[in-house]
Image (cartoon, rainbow, N blue to C red; front, side):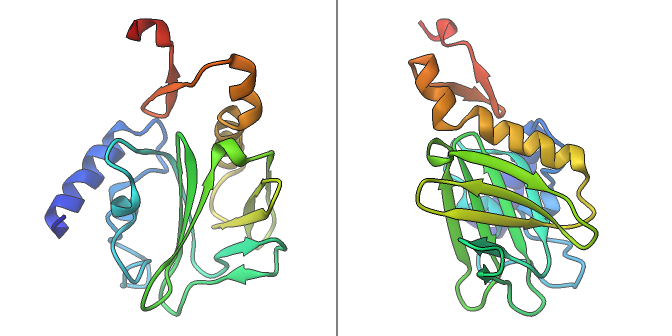
Amino acid sequence: MSEQGQRKRAEAVAQMSPNASVTVPVLADEGHDRGTARLAGPPPVSYLEECEAPAFVLTNEKRGIGLGAKRNRTTPGEDRGTVVLVTGRRTLCLVGVSPDDVAIEIPHEEVATVTYHTGLLANRLELRTPQQAYHCWVDRTADRQLLAETASYIEERSSSDDESEGDSKVMYRGHPVDSSYLK
C-alpha cells in the first residue's frame, strides 16, 4: 500500500475509533516529537489486518516492552519509540528498532490477567498469559482513566469471558455486537 493509501486508512481507522488515543499521526507514524518516525519500518496502520481497527493506542519513547520481567525489555533504538495497538482481538506491541521493527502480538483469548500501574516516571500495562508476562510501558502523560479503560477492554475480551458466553463475539468499532442481528 502506498504512503498516501496508508494515510487514508489511518484517517478512516482513527475516525471510527471509540477512544481519542487513536490518532492519525500515531497510526500513520507522523509528527513524532523527535522529528523522525517512531518505527523504522512501515507505519503502525500497516500492521492491522484488513477489517481490524484499534480501540486504544498507547505509546512510549524509551522503555519499550518488557518480556517476562519488567527489566527484560526490548527497547526502541535512538530517535524511535514504541506503539501499542489494542484491537478487538489482540494487543500488538511495535518497537522501533532498525532495520526491522519488533512486533509482539498478544491475542486477548490467551490473556489470563491484565492490570495497570502508574508511577512518577512511567506507567505500565501488564498482560499475563499462562506462558509469559508482557509489560507494555506507557508514556507518563497517559492518564489513569485511559489505562483503566484499556485494561478493562482487554479483560472483557479475554478467554474467561468468551468461555462463559458460549459463542464468539462480533465486534464493531471495538465494541461487541448482539449476534442476533446477524441471523
